[in-house]
Amino acid sequence: MMNNTAIVQLFSNVINCERCSLLTASKLVRDKSENVPQPGFIGKNYEKKRVLLIGRNPGACPPSMKTRDLVYMQALLNLGSQQTVHTYDTLYYTLLNYMPDWRICRDYFQLDECGLYLEDIAFFNVVRCRTDKNETPSKSLTQNCMNEYLVSFIDIIEPKVIVCIGKWAFDQLNPLIGDRNINTTYINGDRSLNSDERKYNRKAVVDIVREKIRTNE
Image 1 (cartoon, helix red, strand yellow):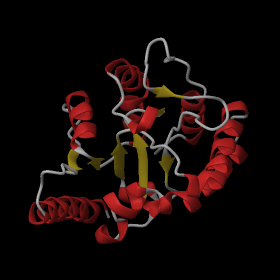
Image 2 (cartoon, helix red, strand yellow; image 1 turned 45 degrees about the vertical axis):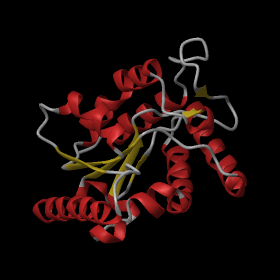
Image 3 (cartoon, helix red, strand yellow; image 1 turned 90 degrees about the vertical axis):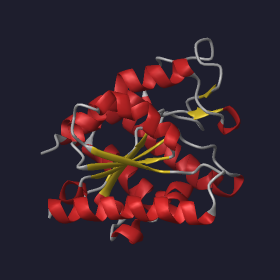
């Protein structure tokens, strides 16, 4: 059973994290208004399914979503300064309305293919901060974030299956959790794949998730 107090504190720790700076991670994009570290999302029904999605790092906000993103950033800042159930719930429902328009839910992993809703899953990134021009996070940025948060999040929420969005996320994660006996797979976004290879990979991931959901019910 997840400890809600621990989750609220862990989310707040991410939001307030200052382990990295432009001196140690040149690609970092972070401030205290429009680019706040993002801890992730844990659905209210997650414990029934225990499906965890892990991406690379948050993408830059497109201009068309700027107003909604600022509301999200403010909810993050509020939780960072006030670690309460109320501020956590405000962030939760902000994400519940915002995440369906993120590419990770809209394009990369369509939940309905697995018979899932957003509230059935958990989601976070290997790296919790945005990067300049959406570049791949630097080694120092990646290592800092993984060492501080990645495994601790996984140990708290105890997923039955992890789906990485892209091979990069999978390659960072796999060496750290190899002894935890968690079924881990990834959506392969390699542009060199043809349409049949993409369909095969997607179907294989969906089959794994559906099987794990059945065994968890």
